[in-house]
Image (tube, rainbow, N blue to C red):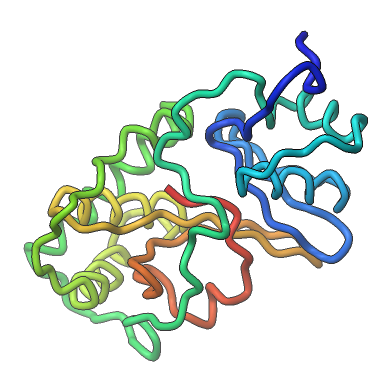
Length: 223
């Protein structure tokens, strides 16, 4: 295996991270796993994520390389956004809303979308599901994202499965991107105790969760 000290290194595609006081939490989408690093090693990962050259702490660099988190081969970084590129959430159209009791015909499409997302996540690797998301459009139509988010939140409660953040947010992002909207799927983590979460977000507006829920988490990666 090539040593990271033998040349320039880059953050591997699909790797995200969040720094905490005494540790870092890493998401490796390719392996569909979260794991912990000590803060020193995590800070090196963050420097690489910002495109900074790192020439010190060979042992920490070697660990990142052995874990597959960095690479000596420069490649297209793909659609991934790291924490510095994710807008801090400031609002959500779901704050204070109650789920409706009636189900419309249009809402049935949401139920189907949520079930399809669950099926895909069960049958395909996470990296495959995420990288097959429709791309963002340069000129999005004037979709009322807040109204769409409220309708989606109401309808997904009728799916024959308990609401879950990943498949439900994935279903919403798929729908909005097919309509030409720049909506991101954001992954976040918290510690004490550890918990992972994900949500759909457009700029600083959270679309699949109340704002208070999302503010408990630090973003680790988005697509």
